[in-house]
Amino acid sequence: MSSQRNSRFRAGATAVALAASALGAAAPAQAAPAGNHPIECRGHGVDPNALIRAEAEAVIDAPLRTIWALQTDVERWPTWQAGVLTMDRLDPGPLRKGSRFRWTTPAPPTPTTPETVLEVTSTVQDAKHQSCLRWTGPAVGEGLRIDEGVHVWTFTKVAGGVRVRTQETWTGAQVEADVPTATALLDGGLEQWMGELKALAEARA
Image 1 (cartoon, rainbow, N blue to C red):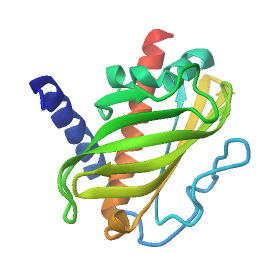
Image 2 (cartoon, rainbow, N blue to C red):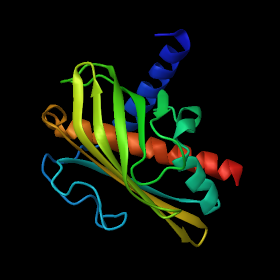
Image 3 (cartoon, rainbow, N blue to C red):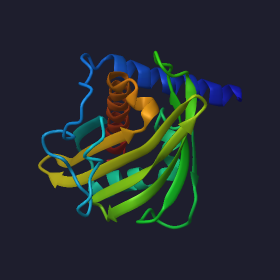
């Protein structure tokens, strides 16, 4: 691993771990709705039966077109997200239903899994311009596998900016072996992602 990539790995893994450790009590090890108000994109949401789930939201004081452009230009995610090490678009054109992209993200060590880099292969299942996105896919690393992640984003104009909401679920025997820890890591990752999106969008507004 190059020194630059190694530095990004440490920074990303540390950021995710710190965000997770700041969450306090972990989620109970049982299935529950993803928040009080599940979100959907074209009628589809996260996995309703998943044990591991988290959500984040923020009102971002920036134009919707700016926020949408940042979120859908996946090839530039590594330039502003500490948790994204590399990114490869697997097809050309704007992000749309059927688009695929492969990216890597650091995973800190847990009591049941080692520190590793996860390779995530995502497929956009639903999309509506400047309104919502939903993608799914597995994440695989040395000593760690998430069989299926389902990630939904919605973007709604409100007073003061744009309300951005996201919900995500994970399934797979390995991560389900320690639901509270996996939930805390997922929650921390979403909060970090939302914070970075808000900071950059508002800086460009």
